[in-house]
Length: 121
Image 1 (cartoon, one colour):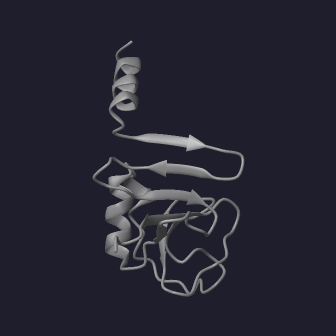
Image 2: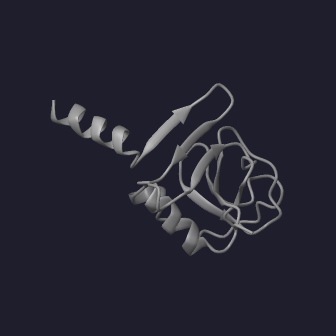
């Protein structure tokens, strides 16, 4: 019962939600941490890839509730280039967050790109 009460509280307060659709999986953090984790290599309208640094990538993943091995290897350097999502992404297979310094654009399996809101003009 306690788990159900906590889940209902989170749902009703909007502190965290996860939505799955046939095309994409969307995971959003708390309102003050507006990051999206989207299956594939493309961010939705009004969002852009997080490309600033691997440290920002790790911190954004933590804000979405990820811990441990999933975030412990974000600084791993590999020349993904255009074969994987641009900037911060969660890798298929081991579910680790990675930071692609290349141009991005592609994805493998169920890679998920981490997106952040476009700056307000």
